[in-house]
Amino acid sequence: MILHAETALLPQGWAKDVRIRIEHGRIAEVTAGVPGRGHGVILPAPVNLHSHTFQRAMAGMTEGRTAGQDSFWTWRALMYRFLERLSPEDVQAIAAQAMVEMAESGFAAVCEFHYLHHPVGGGTYSDPAEMSGRVAAAAAETGLGLTHLPVIYEQGGVDGRALAGGQLRFGSGPEVFARVLDGAGRALAGLPDAVLGVAPHSLRAVSRATLGRVAGMTTGPVHIHIAEQVAEVVEVQAAWGARPVDWACANLPLDARWCLIHATQMTPAETAALARTGAVAGLCPVTEANLGDGIFDGPGWLAAGGAFGVGTDSNVRISLPEE
Image 1 (cartoon, rainbow, N blue to C red):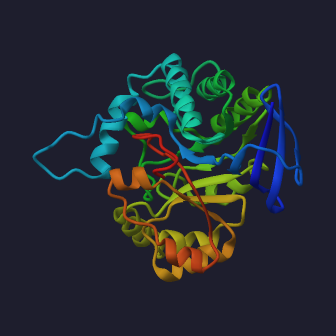
Image 2 (image 1 turned 90 degrees about the vertical axis):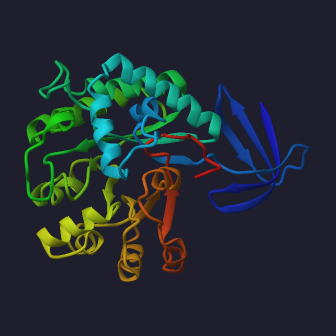
């Protein structure tokens, strides 16, 4: 198949009269300066920078009217109850459905921030990477590119409290997580567009000692939730003496490998400091609006030269144009 574009965005920048030859569903050749009838403008399909695919199946469950005041934390409580019902087969089916919707929306690939590792109640499956294998199988079935980010989740808060309830399906000590990461790498080996990274869940859920080692666990990208909620900022500042993004800029080897998800609770000084590191901001406007996370300082970030991408996060709605 041949596509023509009057204008196309190539790695070198904008180009005129571009011919794109596709063989067996993959781009085989791109040539500029070849006039032809076709499309006006062609852009590379972007990556969905942040997703928890299993949450697609709970979309709408938290949208009811209640007597009290809902928040991110009441949403999280329902999410914990929901995931207690999910089997590996469920996770694969839900991931495949979500990935099809992502492709239909215009995404070419997804960064799956994957923390649902273990059976209900904790422990491990016979293959500790069973759930990662299910996500990889969904990507193979749908053809969506996959950057798989197994999540490190060690504790229930900055104070080191033990995991409880739904969190037990997330938690891994260093030895178990090493087996999860190794198994995830094997699960991705046969996929044509797969990348293995790692994701410390947040400053709340990972110890400082582990945060210091995370960048060396893979050569791939490192993603982390940060400064999403006011309560998180207060908790980290009280325990560590600094706001989350200030602490990360001072203590983590932030560079273009790193993607900091949300960062909706930054001061102007933090915004400028984070942009200077070269790290990417992973923005999820639909989910952030749905959960009342706050509004990212886009003008300040762009003025500081910061890079960003968008993701569908909770997958309450999968829509690239809306993001």
